Each structure stands twice: as C-alpha cells, then as structure tokens.
Length: 550
Image (cartoon, rainbow, N blue to C red; front, top):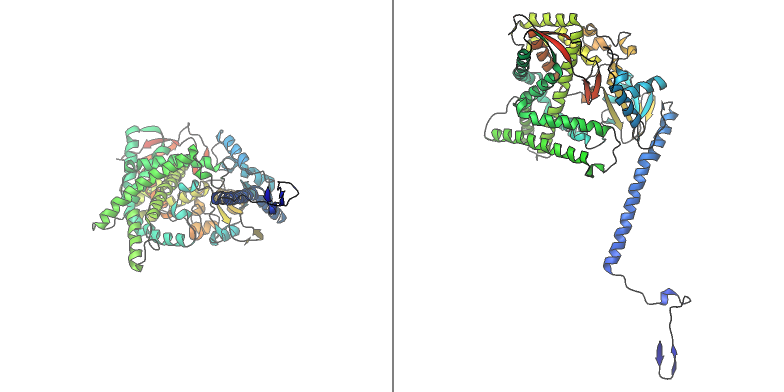
C-alpha cells in the first residue's frame, strides 16, 4: 500500500488483471541458471542418443532392406535389433549336438542357417547380423574385387571387446596398416623363417617324446591337445625365444578370451555397453590387462638387452624390434610417427601368439585326421619324406621341395580352412560390386568354406579329398580364379601364411618319420567353429611306432 499526506492510499494486489511485466521479479541465482542450461543440454544429448539408437536399430535397417530388395536380393525380413542372430545360434547349437558321418560335405553343420538361406533364396541373398545386413557372395570375380579394393571394403568394427582377442595388424586400416605391414614383413621373409626351423624341430621332438612314452607299440591317442600345445610352444620359441611353459599363462588366458568372444558374437553390441561393468566385460578387461602385462615383461627384457649392446635375436620379436628401430633411425622422426609405439608392439605380440597358434594347430589336426582316413596318401607322403631326408631332421631346402606333402596341405586347407568366412564393410559411400550397389553400412560376406566346396568351381568331386588337383600348383587348380583363399587374398593376405606352412611341413615330416596312424573307432567326426574350424570331440587316432625310429 502506497500513501502520502493529502492523497488517498493506493493498494497494489497480485490481481490477474495486472500484467506480470509490471510486477517485481524474483532474481534467478547464477547456480540455478547454469543448472537449467546443463539440464537442457543433457536432455538434448539424451534425445540425440535416443534418436541415433532408434535410427540404428529400426529406420536405418529398414531403409537398407528396401535398397537391397530393389536390386533383386532376397532375405528374411528384418527383426528388431537381433535380425537373424537368435535363429543363427539356435540352429548352430542344435547342429553341434549331433556328429555326422565321415564326410567333407559339412557346410550344413558349421553354417546351418546360411545353408537354409542358400537353399531357400539361392545365390545373391542377405542375412542380418543384428541390425546390419550382410550380402553373401561366392562369385570369384566379385571376391577378387572385394579383396582388391581394401580401402573401400574394410574390416568391420563390431564389438570393441571382441577386438581385444586379436589386435594389431589384422585390425588396422589405412596408413597405420601400411606402416605396420612394412615393419613386420621382414620377420616373415623366407630367409628369416629358415632361421626359426630349429625351434620348430625342438618343439616337435618334445611332443613326439611324450607320444613315445605312452605308445610302446600301438595306442589310441587324442592328438588334438598335443598339436595345440605343439603350435603354442613353436610360436613361443620362434616368436619370443621362450618355450610354451614360459608362455603357458598367456595361452590359458587366450583360450578363455576365445570362449568369451564366442558368447559376445551371439549378442548385439549396443554402443557404450563395453563401459558397463558386467561380469563378461570385467573379465575380458582383466584378462587383456594380464596378457598385456606378461607381454610387456617379455618386451622390456628384450629392450634392455638390446640397449646393453646385445644384437637383435632372429626370432619374430627381435626382428620386429630391429625393423622398428631402424625405421626410426633412418628417418629420425618422433617415435609416434614412425616405428611402433610400445602399445603397438604389445598388440602385435599378442596377435603373434593367437594367430600363430590357432592356424597351425588346426591345419595339423585336420591333416592327421585325413591322412588317417586316406592311408594311400599317408604312405605316399612318408615315402617322399624318407626319400628326401631319410631319418635326419628335415632341413629348410628339402621342405621347400616336398611336392606331395604340399599338395596334401593345400587340399586340407581347401576342405578344412582354418578361418571359414570373412566379412568386409562399406563405410563412407555407396560402392559398386558387379551389378550391385552396396550402400554404406552394409557388410559383404565371403564364405571361404562355401567357395572351397562349390561344385560349380571345383567340379562334382568338390567335397572329395583329392590332393592331385594341386599337382600343377594353386594357379592351375583354380584356373586363375579367386576360389582358394584359406589365408585371405590381395594386399591383406595373412602375413604369417608361410610361417604356418613351413611349421606344418616340419611337424608332419617328423611325425611321418616315426609314426604311422589311422582313425580310431572312437573318433567322432564333428567339425565346428570356435573362431577357427576345429574337431569338436578331439582327434582320436591310433598311433603306431615305426620300426627303426628312435
């Protein structure tokens, strides 16, 4: 109420008829103002994230599905978030319950869902890896195009936790891939592999000594765990100058990581989920941290020795460190630009351990299984080996001239490739692939197994074991087509393929010098994939010591 002498009182009330602009305002504090701004920004970010998620799991897949259908491609209709994942793994788990007769026609056991789609839709179909469509191709020319255009068809980035299993060169792109490939290449030159042969021989001898303790004359042995340990020991000696016993903990952790990775493949990765402290996420990170610590110890020990003036060793790590150091000295550039960072070195070492062990062990186990079944080829291989080396330990030059053994290994790799499929992804812009236009966000699936078994490419005997098809070499067997690629193809072909082949030749030669073998009645044929193609129930073989073998 306002008043003055001689004037009537004026009463001001909060009547709705008085405009708010004329009323006194309560002043907003600075904290309240900033809080409102923060809440507003937070809501905008949340809404943006929600939109991206909805677009990712619904609108984008439906858009891509329409684009693929317009081009005549067929496939199942998209199912929210999971796509075909649930059905894929349900059928896979069902298939794993039942072994099969001894046949090399096992695509339907390893890929039952893809086999069903192939029968239903024919060639040129797509499936759903969660909300991401995958176009499946087997045409050799299209396969060549995908492998050749490595910057356009790139390796997919899926669950980051899966990438912990096999980091390094295999996961890099662009300039980083080129730099690492250049630095690692010297370690896999034939002359360097020649220096690693004694390490391979030592590992094989130790394995066969164990066999001879349990095989007095003839006994059944599950050779699979022995071959796994053999390849692990060989990669430890050849890569780091240590034995399997010293690297045992690393291999135990890698085995557990492989099993957890398989579980992660069965679920859709939601961006950011790796930061949620679930038991699986925590265990994956714990194992990765322990592996990195162990590898760091190996590298530190080697680095101190080199700094003290010791020459670089001729194992993979020594060659890698020497190559990286020379690159730095040559250009005089900062460490992060040329050469390899410390973390890069650890990642490449982990990849050596994982890929080197997996590839060779599965190649050897399937070779022994097939030679157990096809005794005539086992005899021919042994005769060639004895004619070349006698009872002496195989040498590098002799291994390079083993024609029959090479034919056998190639046919094993054709029928039982270690890696049964690879995917590539289009990221930035639409890509032409033959008559197809592949939109960004779409995967291209290359089934190595299906291509290797395709009767249109290999003939009516495509699923028969016939090493003679490689008697004239790979180029003649494939007629120049990209129809045999157990180690990939093109610029990104597996850098360790020669390493795996030389090790396998060495091991097989030494085994055949001292043992003959045949399938045990208890052997169960059940190829399955756990990252690589493995015998689900082991490899039960009857080993017989040869007369005159030490």
